[in-house]
Length: 322
Image 1 (spheres, rainbow, N blue to C red):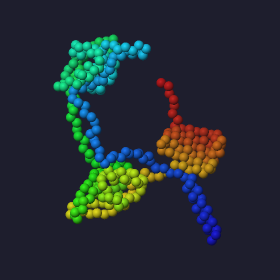
Image 2 (cartoon, one colour):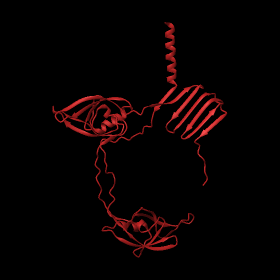
Image 3 (tube, helix red, strand yellow):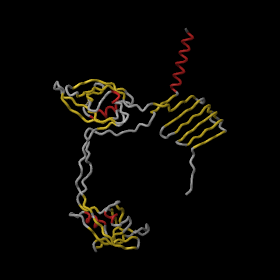
Image 4 (cartoon, rainbow, N blue to C red):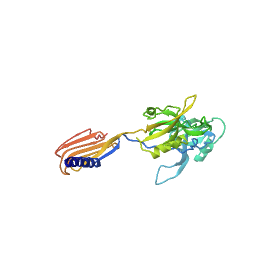
């Protein structure tokens, strides 16, 4: 009996030691997400105002010499919007606009004032200097529309833990009780919800016994209070036309799986692996200056070593001079 106990104790001790020498990490990299607030403003852009779109940015025409900076006649074009009015007129960055409709221009404010003109689209005749060549071109300015589309919120998405989309639902039970919850409106690939027999249209009204107030509230709590792979209890309300059914389900949140990332058994065996960067190191009987066998992989490069004398490598790139 004592021998059996000693063997069991030794086995348990060995397992504990091995477990302490082994580390794990997720099988695949899990991205982080930023959680929205309950109230979201989707129209954050400032009105650009009405006027003409010239399709370019301009600046003072300063000389290129750092030792003698002077302002030369004309206005320098800093950048040109692709397929914009200036681009279609043949202007390029570093061109210098000398005249507009026969009037000399020497300050970018004159261009800005031109762009703020109201009315219909207009055409302007420009005299432009490119290096030492002066040419004439016609710029057909376009009216800027100040009308903006109004974004409409569709749903709140949880792209990782439940991989589903939800909207906030407020409804009244047959008993006259008002309930709120998160109504399921979409499933993403690998969503664990269908495996728990949940359907689009179901409403989650409680999470582990705590009432769900909104779609964002459900997503925020799941992603801040639980770990991937945890099991949660959801209370569901399902509209069956004739009646409103309520029931509970056990849901296992999406799990990326686990992989061994490190094994350390002194000099006898060493193993390390990571996904970012993608690399693996493995050695047997590593005595610092001497190792029986070692293997190293970094991205697509692999190197093998036997007795610290024989080395073989594959996947190394070549440095080419062009």
